Length: 68
Ligand SMILES: [Zn+2]
Image (cartoon, rainbow, N blue to C red; front, side, top):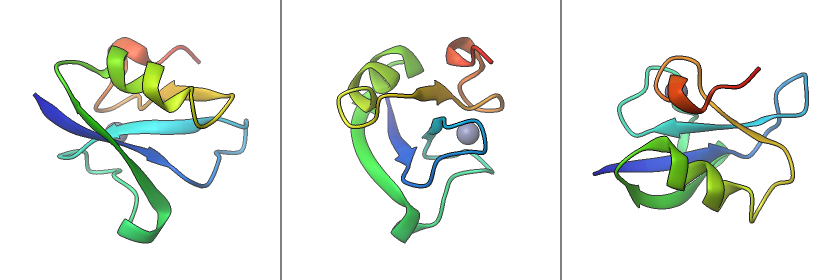
C-alpha cells in the first residue's frame, strides 16, 4: 500500500494529477490533497474524481492510470 495525493493546481490541460508518496513530482504540502492508502493508482484516481472532475495518473509514478 502506498499513500496517494492529488495536485490541487490543475495542469495546463485541466488535469489534477494523482501521485504516490515517493514520486519525484509529488507536489509540495500546500499544493496537494491526501487521498488515502491504495494498492495501486486505480483506487486513488477514483477517489480523486470525487474531488475534481478531471484527474489523471502521473506518467512517472502512476503510469497505469496515465491516459493522456
Ligand atoms: Zn507522480
